Structure formats: structure tokens, C-alpha cells
Image 1 (cartoon, chains in turn blue, orange):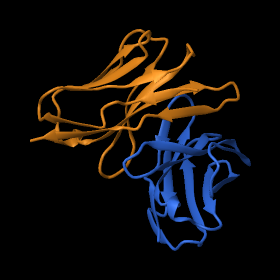
Image 2 (cartoon, rainbow over the protein chains, first blue to last red):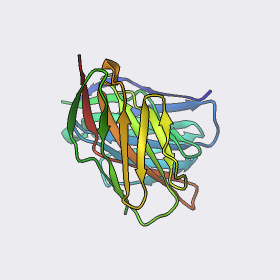
Image 3 (cartoon, each protein chain N blue to C red):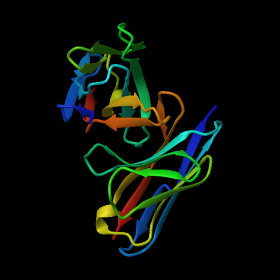
Length: 110
Length: 117
């Protein structure tokens, strides 16, 4: 069966520091991969999606970037975090018509 | 662009009662998928139920069922015999397969459901 893992689960980072959130999927090949952000009390905002290695599409202009160095690995990064980057980040995968989510990562920028 | 609207930010229901969560969407497409996801306090997003737009029959999963009204672009979720474990944020989602092979999912802002003992 397919599984998805993302880490770290929680992260407290100072403003201006870098960020790296990692996500891996097991049990499938060539999935669509996604990064969503969920701000407090709000819905899910699609940040990036990828249909293959090295193929990244950005949905909103922002301080973040994404990379897909391997088929089942998706990384969310920032060179310099802003306070507004705080939130709950969810990695997800889809192959076919249903999307499945990782456990999420809490990021607090202080 | 497609949009998904959940007009009920919060709802509550007594244990064992039935509750219906509303969702409307806007699209000009004919082939698409609709979903309800549950996000309990643990924050793990869990698929509750899915519906293919080309199917007229409403999807059901145990105590969860949907009322899919394609013409009205409405996709409500009914939870029967509510249980304390149903307390969660519920998200409605829309997906339209893209010709590029991408699946883009649009989520509503969620409805926070509290089941009362």
C-alpha cells in the first residue's frame, strides 16, 4: 500500500533563517505531488504541484520554493523565512482521482 | 476558475443525531470529482467520501452519504448517528483532471463540526 511521510512534524525558526520540509511517498511511482499551506482558521492553499522529476508549478507568488529531486521526494524550501510563512504545511500525493495527505508540519516563525 | 464554498464555518450536533454540511461549487466543466475530507484535532487529513460527477447515484460510506445536485452545483455531506469521533474540520474539495496529466484540487474553507455528548 502507499504511504506518505513528511518531516519535521514541528519547527520553530527565527525570521530570516532557511527552511527545508521534506516529503516522501512509498508504494507508487510517478505520482502528482503537492504542497499546501493551511493558515490558522482557514482552508488549504495550494502552493506548488509537480507532475514529475524537476517539474514544479507554482500557484502563488511567495517566499517559498519547491523541488523534486527524485520521483517520490518533494521538498519545500525557503532561503529567508518571514513571519507570514508561519502555518501548517501539508504534503500530498495523487495518482488517479484522489489526493492523499501526509501528517503535516507545523512551522512557527519567531 | 473553479471555486468551492462552504457557507457554514461552525456547526454542532448532538451525539446520535444527523447533521448535514453544505458545499457549493462553481465550474463550467462536465467531468470532475468531488470529495469530503475530515481533519480531526490531530490535523491528519482523511478522505471521507468521493463522488464522480458523471454518476447520478449519491455516494455512501457507512454513516456518511452525500446529496449531489449537479445542476445546482451542490454537494452536501450527511452524517448519520453522529459520534464523538466525528468532531473535526470538514473540507469539501473539487478536482478537474487536466490534459497535462495533473490533478488540481480546490478546497473550501472548511466547516468545524462539534459533536456534543
